[in-house]
Image 1 (cartoon, chains in turn green, blue):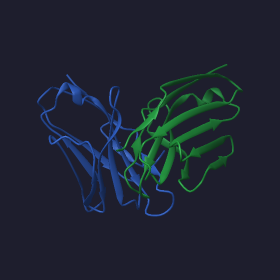
Image 2: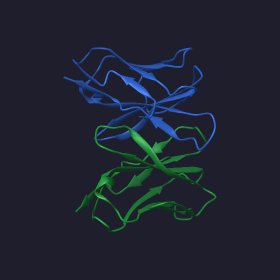
Image 3: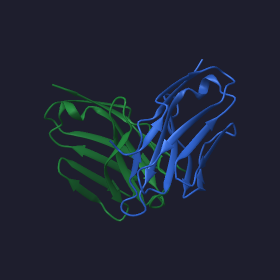
Image 4: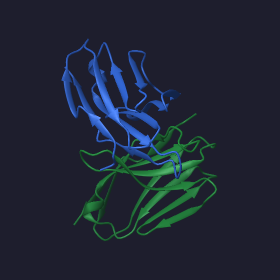
Length: 111
Length: 113
């Protein structure tokens, strides 16, 4: 079945690294995404990884994928107050197919 | 600005009523998706259209229906509204090439009283 799970809250201090975790159940998931939602706004893609990759780095963002454990993580280096938002993990079986989202992790960054 | 436009931004109505939410996708995007976001259910996929045809269906109630018109805009119709239908309804569109990224509108917030 399709199920994506995330912890609901994470609080870090400005300048620290944040790690947001996600687990998914569908082993046929091919594409995995991280989206960010700021208050009053829609979701915005942060980064993505294909299932044939283990890691992807994009500036302050590092995505790690453990296919065996069906575990995805997003690391944000040098977290800033502007990073405070809700972060959603999502999976898809096909490019441009429907995305199944986790519940979202609310990241709070304290100065 | 994602380029996806949703109207109305806010809507308050009574139980039993019917409403229509409208979405204009990014210029050139053929795929439109509808999602419902609520506190208890999170982000739920409702339905996907591609160039006017239904492509995938998710947890969409029978009281809800959608369509995509020849100009590619889409409408989500919600009828016999219940209190539990109060939620934020997002439309997203995707391009036909690239990463499959969904571009989301800002949502239509529906409150059913």
